[in-house]
Image (cartoon, rainbow, N blue to C red):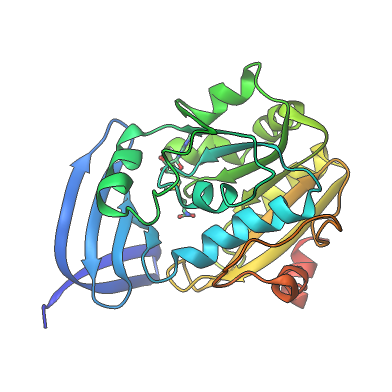
Length: 276
Ligand code: SAM
């Protein structure tokens, strides 16, 4: 077996390593270092600036949970915006809802989209959906523009460093609020509550400054630092922990189901205390 490993450093005291058999692609884009590697345990993986973004083995958990919770708690998710998400995994899940009429996706780095099409065709499979308008642009600038109104906005960003840093600010969430219809909702991937507690608490606090209803849910994603991962919803009207009565769940799913939707909002004590 190969003895090559890649390392992901999370804090000065914590690092994760994956054994790899091949480096399929490496480039420095105008925004970040992009790598595609073949890992022994998790299959093919996309890495941006040293941080693993998706792996073949567990990408379904993140993508099903970031997409279907808002898409099914909203009664009519006809118009959707995805910020980031250039690999296409969130889009693939959003596109499974027959209610979807239009999806705008704004990704800053065209090279992520190209790499996903080439190396992750099963993740990128909806990038040719006729309902998609793909904008290669900064999500911050896009949110200041005259787009929408959207029923659901999904912020599928990388960690709050480099180009994604301004996606974790109250000004950005205010602009997203303005792009939403009067009953719209936004979901933000809000990081690890254990390793990036400040980012998580900031997202919750910032969304609370903008939206009348804010709720947090979790999923367990082995390739993200330590596993437990949070998503935070800001909503103008509908509760995100309830599936809208008129909606049916696309089939098949690998992680998401009716019980998971409800249970994902049950939070451990230490997280509830962080939100006080
Ligand atoms: N699931 C992943 C995770 O949490 O690790 C995130 C996946 S997706 C690959 C994140 C995308 O956000 C990247 O392709 C990155 O280029 C994009 N991105 C970062 N900053 C952005 C910005 N300001 N505007 C639009 N897209 C941005």
